[in-house]
Image (tube, rainbow, N blue to C red):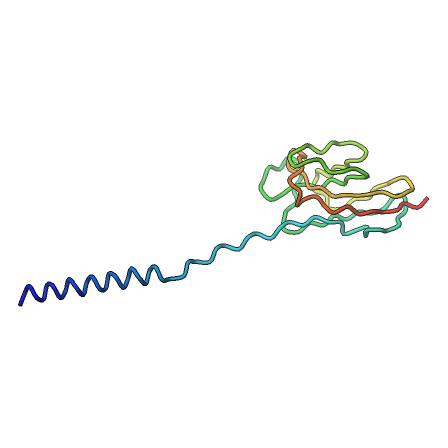
Length: 149
């Protein structure tokens, strides 16, 4: 009788273990963490196609990324550059500092620029702590402005 009770307890224990193992496997997996939203860089002003005076305000826009002065080496931040009538360098390339690559390394989010009369293409690029292009997602679509005489 004692052996029969042991066998029954063993069978019951095995059944419980199998049930627990099956239940553990049947549980849905925890949901994967949501992907971080993609960064967006854009001009708040001027509007694409605007006609502007020779000196005009430019307001930078950025979503899902941070702004910090040049030299701040941190993940998820950069500083603005306005490129005038030129293409952006490749990812990881230093943005030159000259008359067509305007740097805003103090963390500025707006400025006033002066251009000669005519049609100009502007592009915003976010650079890292060393003024290198962070990536294509942090290069704005170009806008065109016409500077009146």
